[in-house]
Image 1 (cartoon, rainbow, N blue to C red):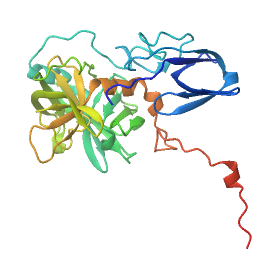
Image 2 (image 1 turned 90 degrees about the vertical axis):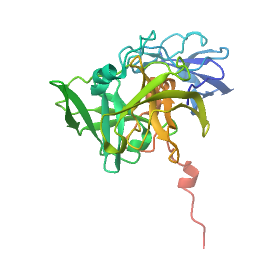
Image 3 (image 1 turned 180 degrees about the vertical axis):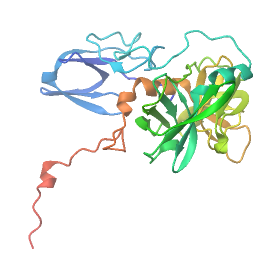
Image 4 (image 1 turned 90 degrees about the horizontal axis):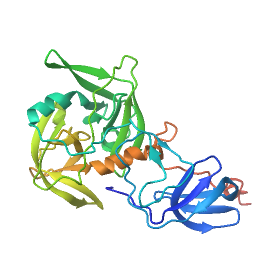
Length: 323
């Protein structure tokens, strides 16, 4: 969950100026099979203009400026730069660690970017990553739901005023990372306040963090604590563990450092203990956003990113057994 590696930085340049990076499994006279991490692509030979075989690639966590991935015409060395580059502006990421501030000032500054996510089956939290209405929450908050609303708290005359948006579209889902990307599409929506991502790798154990969310429906609840560990392994993935109180309803909300950066997405707690909250590291969230096209949600196939292929024709036209 924290970072994905590509075993070998092999690159296939295609005729449409796109590029595919992965590990070449086999080469045949009419096709090439490439393992790209989450699936295997079989690319026709007549679509390939060049094959470049590289060395061990670095984890596919992209630099600070992000947006929709675009294909480039020429491959870059796998050790220094991935082939797929993001466009700037989709979300913000700090390039330097900001100075620490007090939680009171940060909550007043960041509060409008944190939202409550409601569905017929329950509620959770989320936060805007850009002014266009894209927001992050947990997959389990919206799992199996298509009717989603988002409550935003706008600052008016020193107070927060509730505003509900009901035209919310699911953009991308990753069940295994427990992440979802949503977009507010109401016609009367204004520019939204957003927050920037920091680095969970740069955190030190014992550093103070705080969460904003809606535990048990109590919107705009702030809890503070410390980072207990950065590498708590649970079911094969690594999480941030914190003493900041996390309860049902906090799921999908941001975990901040004292610089006001999102260092994690809160998603679970140990129910029979106190001060045992967990968050998805910011690096995993950024990886999900950088590769959101691979997790794109389709209303015609709510089980994305799984794609179910048609059965072989011989089974479709198989004659029934004679009596």
